[in-house]
Image 1 (cartoon, helix red, strand yellow):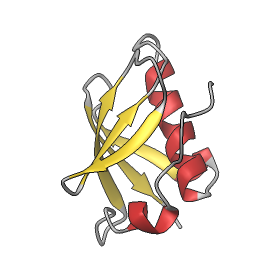
Image 2 (cartoon, rainbow, N blue to C red):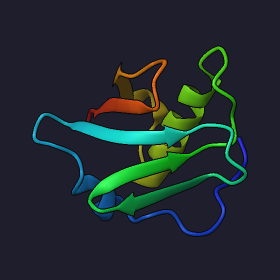
Image 3 (cartoon, rainbow, N blue to C red):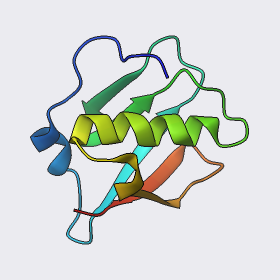
Image 4 (cartoon, one colour):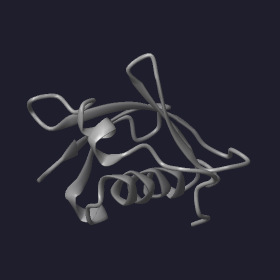
Length: 93
């Protein structure tokens, strides 16, 4: 996976977006030119270079989120949106 361009949002800024049950909703743009995490209007937007084939984009999103949160990728579970741009992950602390 390519390194994200620029700074990632702080883990604290991302944790504010996680609900009480540990769920994080986000919108993904696969096949982007650069990898990035952005918070726009209290919503997380994720851009990954990976194409949406065979779960590659989902894996790239999980890895990028894990890096930004300072967690192992195995601590993030995709709950909803395996084939959608709108996704929801559960973060286990």
